[in-house]
Length: 474
Image (cartoon, rainbow, N blue to C red; front, side):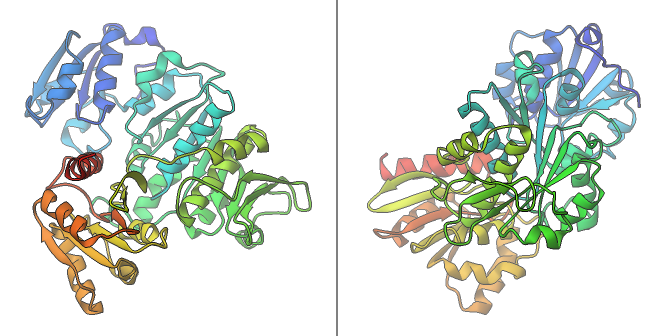
C-alpha cells in the first residue's frame, strides 16, 4: 500500500481515520497533528465517551468527527489513510479494507529530518531511552524523546530539525507496524535484553523476535546497531544487520566470543568497580563512559545504562559528557522508582515490570528486606524459570488475577508464604504497610499485565503512588 503522505502539504484535505483514540497520547497526538495540518479527521474507538473523556477534553475545539463505542467499515473503506493504534492487530478486517495504513511513529518518520536514536528490547528499553535523552540534554544538546514511553513524536514534530536528535523507544508492536514501509533508518539502533513477552499475542519467540529485527532492517553501513554481547538474540541480530556493530557486555572478552572483530567498538563493566569502560579498537585508548556511582539501583539497570552510554559514544558524544550525564540520571517513572519514605520504610514503584523475569531482576536489586506486591493478569507467560527468585522477598502480597493463579502453586511448592490474593488494591497496600518495618523496602513489581484491576501499567503505578501517599499522609 503506497502512502499518500510525502510532505506536510499532502495532509491538506486528506481523509484520515484514526483507529484507536486511546488514553496514552498516541491517538490524541495523531488527531491533533492531522487536524491542525488540514486533514479531514475521523477518530474511532471501541471505548465510549466516558472512558475517553480526558482525551476528548484535550481535543476540544478541533474539527474532528468522532465514532465511539464502535467502528464503522465505511470510515476505513472511504478514507485516504488510516492511522492505527499499535495495540490493534494488523489482521483486523477494518485495516484490510483501508487503502493505506500508517501509525503516528511512521507518519513522524516520513516527515522529520531529525537524526534518530531508536531503542527496543523486552525489558530495559525505557530506562535506556530516557538515559539517552537525559545525557544528550545534559551535554547541552537540544534533544527529544518519544515513542513507547507514551509520548507521540507527532506532539513535538514542530521542534525537530536536522540538528535535533530524537530518541524513540519502540515496542515490537510499533516495529511490526513499520514493516515494509522503509521509514525507520536510525542513526543508532540500541538493542536491550530479549526475553519472552507478549506471548498472548505471539505464537512463539521466533515470531516475537521477527518484529524486533525490524529496528535495523533498513539501516546501512553508515549507521550503528548496538548489541548486548551476553544475549543470544542480540548476537543473532548483530550477525545480520547491515549497520556497523557496537558491542556492550558484562566483561571485555565477551565481544570476541560474540563474533566481534578486534576493531569492533565495545563497552564493558570493570569487574572491581563496575565502571563502564569503552574502547574503539582492541588495544586502543580506554575511556570511562559509565561511573561506578549511579543513582538508579540494580545490576540490570547498570547494564542498560552501559548500552545507552555506548550508543551515545558512537553517536558522537565525548566520554566525559556521557559519564557526567549518567552520574546524574535518576531513572524512569514506574521502573524501580523510589517515590516515598516514612516510618523507616522505602517504597518503590516498578509497575512496568510486566514479565516474571523483570520481577526477578528487581528483587536482585536490593540488599534490604523486601515486601513484594506482585501478581495480576496473565499474558501466557511461564513463571517457573524465575520462581525461586520470589523467595528473595521476605513477605509477598498478591494481587488477584489469572497470572497470580499460575504463580501460587509455584510459591506453595517452595513453601513460600504469601498474603492474598487481594481483589482490592487498598487492602493490598494496607497489608504491605503492616508487614514492613524500619529498614525495609516495599516493592510493587507485578510480573503481570494490569488489565482487570487497572487501565494499564502506568495507571497501576500512579494508583500505587497515590494510594501509598494517601495511606502514609504524605
